[in-house]
Image (cartoon, rainbow, N blue to C red; front, side, top):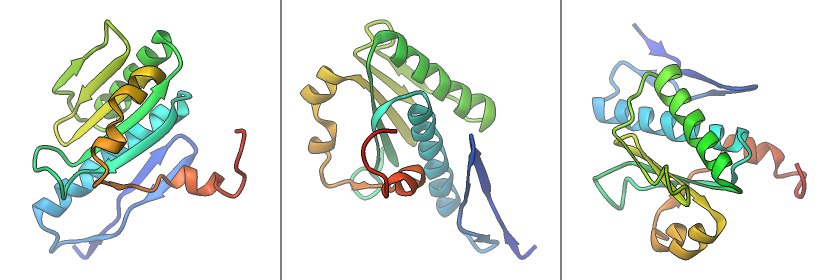
Length: 157
């Protein structure tokens, strides 16, 4: 009874999501879960040296999914590693199930479909060509807590 707290542990960073009261609707819980999955996928891409990691909030644009996670990898091997680690995190650690995967063999654009969260892993050339951030420019960018912490020291990591 009362208030429940959700704590998500991503590597060395612990994020505490807003307290959720018992009166929270199932839609709000589903939205909170989608955000949890999107941030976990984004953090996993970042931890595996994905570049230019972005989370777009798609909820006000389309009813089909809640979030896009977009990241760039430098090689086929890196794109595979990022996609496999995201699968491991979302499926094994968070108990979600991937609904589909596209582009794994070609490894220029790997799409991981988790229903409410769709992750797009690109090589640099393909990301520039399809320019999803510009195509979906109405979507709000979700701030990534680990980027906020490092914003004070721009440049190299």
